Image (tube, rainbow, N blue to C red; front, side, top):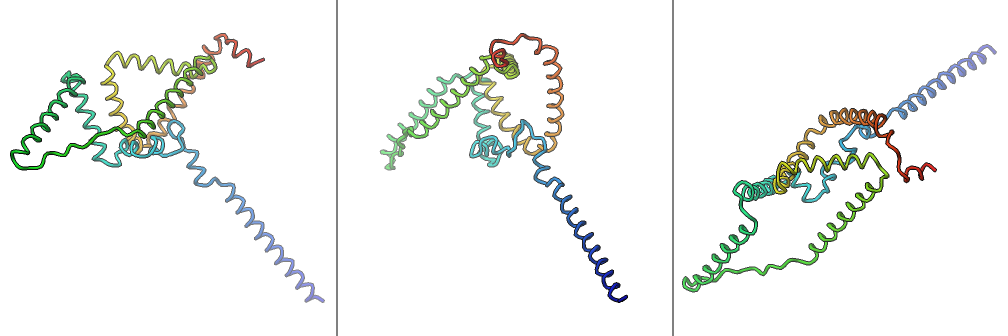
Amino acid sequence: MAEHEEKKHEESLMDRIAEKIQAHDSSSSDSDNDKPSESTIKAKVFRLFGREKPVHHVLGGGKPADIFLWRNKKISAGALGVATVIWILFEMLEYHLLTLVCHLLILALALLFLWSNAATFVNKSPPRIPEVQIPKDPVMEFAQALRFEINRAFAVLRDIASGRDLKKFLSVIAGLWILSIVGSWCNFLTLFYIVFVLLHTVPVLYEKYEDKVDPFAEKAMHEIKKQYAVFDAKVLRKIPRGPLKEKKKD
């Protein structure tokens, strides 16, 4: 009888130990599930302009993004070199586009004409001048893409002019004002060349040092939002709302 009770006591003790082990395992698994995964931690990292994709994808991918990010150094350096030569010709040497085109055509036609006539005296085959034609499909695709972007710009301008978003209106006005100041400093060709150089330098530098740039950008964006909140409370909210705002409130 005493042995039977002792066995029951041992069995109950073992059951209690097993229950405690199971409870500990379940609590540890729950705590592991409650911990944020590495992917969620990475997702919460601040990225400039709120992007969630790599810089290459943000630039559109494909060959243009490869050129801007120097995936092929020869092509990128060649594009930047050609743009620099064009800028030096038109801006530094004050060459004109029509004059340059005419001089290039004169040189090309004179060389081909002399080569074709001289080939008969030297008993050599004349140069094979390729037949150049502009393909229809790429031109149509470019025209459609340009039309889509222009229509989207018109839609954005119409939305801004309708008075629905004061914040967007002020940001666009400030951007246009800054652009007008920059335009007074230099002509369109110089401005285009500056933008072209920036596209070939800023994205690749940002991609290389984005872990250092993003925390600084986060602090800057936080400070800008703070200053905008003060400006909104002191100035923007005191501006009388138009009929569109009143209708929305009703």
